[in-house]
Image 1 (tube, rainbow, N blue to C red):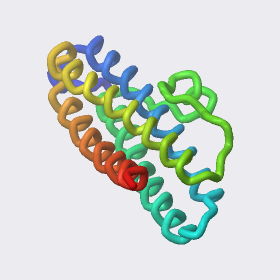
Image 2 (cartoon, one colour):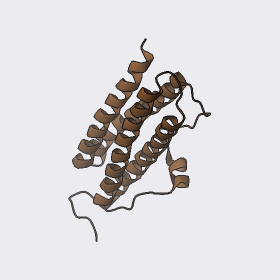
Image 3 (cartoon, rainbow, N blue to C red):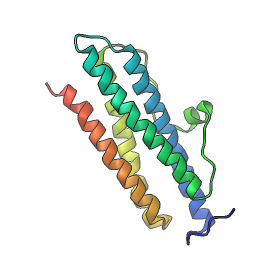
Length: 157
Protein backbone atom coordinates (compact mmCIF):
# COMPACT_ATOMS: atom_id res chain seq x y z
CA UNK A 1 0.00 0.00 0.00
CA UNK A 2 1.26 3.46 -0.89
CA UNK A 3 2.59 5.63 1.94
CA UNK A 4 0.78 8.99 2.27
CA UNK A 5 2.65 10.92 4.98
CA UNK A 6 3.01 14.31 3.30
CA UNK A 7 6.39 13.66 1.66
CA UNK A 8 6.63 13.24 -2.12
CA UNK A 9 7.49 9.76 -3.41
CA UNK A 10 10.76 10.95 -4.96
CA UNK A 11 11.86 12.31 -1.57
CA UNK A 12 10.95 9.07 0.18
CA UNK A 13 12.91 7.13 -2.46
CA UNK A 14 15.97 9.35 -1.91
CA UNK A 15 15.71 8.86 1.86
CA UNK A 16 15.31 5.09 1.47
CA UNK A 17 18.37 4.94 -0.80
CA UNK A 18 20.53 6.72 1.79
CA UNK A 19 19.15 4.55 4.58
CA UNK A 20 20.11 1.46 2.55
CA UNK A 21 23.73 2.69 2.59
CA UNK A 22 23.51 3.28 6.33
CA UNK A 23 22.03 -0.19 6.80
CA UNK A 24 24.96 -1.65 4.86
CA UNK A 25 27.46 0.30 6.99
CA UNK A 26 25.82 -0.94 10.18
CA UNK A 27 25.91 -4.57 8.98
CA UNK A 28 29.59 -4.37 8.08
CA UNK A 29 30.41 -2.76 11.43
CA UNK A 30 28.30 -5.36 13.25
CA UNK A 31 30.17 -8.18 11.50
CA UNK A 32 33.58 -6.67 12.32
CA UNK A 33 32.62 -6.18 15.95
CA UNK A 34 31.34 -9.76 16.18
CA UNK A 35 34.55 -11.05 14.58
CA UNK A 36 36.68 -9.19 17.13
CA UNK A 37 34.48 -10.56 19.92
CA UNK A 38 35.25 -14.08 18.72
CA UNK A 39 38.96 -13.51 18.16
CA UNK A 40 40.08 -11.17 20.93
CA UNK A 41 43.07 -12.30 23.01
CA UNK A 42 44.99 -10.79 25.90
CA UNK A 43 45.13 -10.53 29.64
CA UNK A 44 41.84 -8.62 29.62
CA UNK A 45 40.09 -11.14 27.37
CA UNK A 46 36.94 -11.37 29.51
CA UNK A 47 36.52 -7.59 29.65
CA UNK A 48 36.99 -7.11 25.91
CA UNK A 49 34.88 -10.15 25.02
CA UNK A 50 31.97 -8.64 26.97
CA UNK A 51 32.69 -5.11 25.69
CA UNK A 52 32.50 -6.23 22.04
CA UNK A 53 29.39 -8.27 22.81
CA UNK A 54 27.66 -5.19 24.25
CA UNK A 55 28.62 -3.13 21.20
CA UNK A 56 27.44 -5.67 18.62
CA UNK A 57 24.21 -6.06 20.59
CA UNK A 58 23.60 -2.31 20.27
CA UNK A 59 24.43 -2.48 16.58
CA UNK A 60 21.94 -5.33 16.07
CA UNK A 61 19.20 -3.12 17.51
CA UNK A 62 20.26 -0.20 15.29
CA UNK A 63 20.18 -2.46 12.22
CA UNK A 64 16.63 -3.54 13.01
CA UNK A 65 15.49 0.05 13.56
CA UNK A 66 16.96 1.21 10.25
CA UNK A 67 15.39 -1.66 8.31
CA UNK A 68 12.04 -0.90 9.95
CA UNK A 69 12.38 2.81 9.16
CA UNK A 70 12.92 1.95 5.49
CA UNK A 71 9.72 -0.12 5.61
CA UNK A 72 7.83 2.68 7.40
CA UNK A 73 8.48 5.03 4.51
CA UNK A 74 7.23 2.48 1.98
CA UNK A 75 10.33 0.67 0.72
CA UNK A 76 11.89 -2.75 1.12
CA UNK A 77 15.10 -3.14 3.08
CA UNK A 78 18.26 -4.59 1.60
CA UNK A 79 19.14 -7.89 3.23
CA UNK A 80 21.85 -9.65 1.25
CA UNK A 81 25.52 -9.55 2.20
CA UNK A 82 26.61 -8.92 -1.40
CA UNK A 83 24.38 -5.85 -1.55
CA UNK A 84 25.72 -4.59 1.78
CA UNK A 85 29.29 -4.88 0.53
CA UNK A 86 28.42 -2.95 -2.65
CA UNK A 87 26.69 -0.16 -0.71
CA UNK A 88 28.91 0.31 2.34
CA UNK A 89 31.20 3.26 3.00
CA UNK A 90 33.39 1.05 5.21
CA UNK A 91 36.50 -0.94 4.33
CA UNK A 92 37.45 -4.41 5.44
CA UNK A 93 40.91 -4.67 6.97
CA UNK A 94 43.12 -7.71 7.41
CA UNK A 95 42.34 -10.07 10.27
CA UNK A 96 43.88 -9.13 13.58
CA UNK A 97 43.63 -10.29 17.16
CA UNK A 98 45.63 -7.29 18.44
CA UNK A 99 43.25 -5.31 20.62
CA UNK A 100 44.68 -1.90 19.77
CA UNK A 101 44.26 -2.55 16.04
CA UNK A 102 40.76 -3.94 16.55
CA UNK A 103 39.72 -0.88 18.54
CA UNK A 104 41.24 1.52 16.01
CA UNK A 105 39.44 -0.21 13.14
CA UNK A 106 36.10 -0.08 14.96
CA UNK A 107 36.64 3.54 16.01
CA UNK A 108 37.44 4.53 12.42
CA UNK A 109 34.22 2.86 11.26
CA UNK A 110 32.09 4.52 13.92
CA UNK A 111 33.58 7.90 13.02
CA UNK A 112 32.89 7.27 9.32
CA UNK A 113 29.26 6.49 10.17
CA UNK A 114 29.07 9.57 12.43
CA UNK A 115 30.21 11.83 9.59
CA UNK A 116 27.68 10.21 7.23
CA UNK A 117 24.89 10.62 9.80
CA UNK A 118 25.70 14.34 10.15
CA UNK A 119 25.22 14.72 6.40
CA UNK A 120 21.96 12.77 6.49
CA UNK A 121 20.45 14.85 9.29
CA UNK A 122 20.47 18.03 7.24
CA UNK A 123 19.80 16.33 3.90
CA UNK A 124 16.70 14.59 5.25
CA UNK A 125 15.34 17.71 6.94
CA UNK A 126 16.29 20.42 4.43
CA UNK A 127 16.35 18.72 1.04
CA UNK A 128 13.91 15.80 1.46
CA UNK A 129 11.60 17.53 4.01
CA UNK A 130 11.51 14.33 6.11
CA UNK A 131 11.81 15.58 9.67
CA UNK A 132 10.92 12.18 11.14
CA UNK A 133 13.83 10.41 9.50
CA UNK A 134 16.11 13.36 10.26
CA UNK A 135 15.20 13.01 13.94
CA UNK A 136 15.65 9.24 13.71
CA UNK A 137 19.22 9.52 12.38
CA UNK A 138 19.99 12.19 14.99
CA UNK A 139 19.30 9.53 17.62
CA UNK A 140 21.60 7.12 15.80
CA UNK A 141 24.29 9.80 15.77
CA UNK A 142 24.17 10.02 19.57
CA UNK A 143 24.44 6.23 19.88
CA UNK A 144 27.46 6.07 17.58
CA UNK A 145 29.12 9.00 19.33
CA UNK A 146 28.80 7.14 22.63
CA UNK A 147 30.14 3.88 21.19
CA UNK A 148 33.05 5.77 19.60
CA UNK A 149 33.80 7.46 22.93
CA UNK A 150 33.90 4.07 24.64
CA UNK A 151 36.33 2.74 22.02
CA UNK A 152 38.44 5.90 22.13
CA UNK A 153 38.79 5.56 25.91
CA UNK A 154 40.70 2.29 25.43
CA UNK A 155 43.25 4.10 23.24
CA UNK A 156 43.86 7.02 25.62
CA UNK A 157 46.50 5.65 27.96
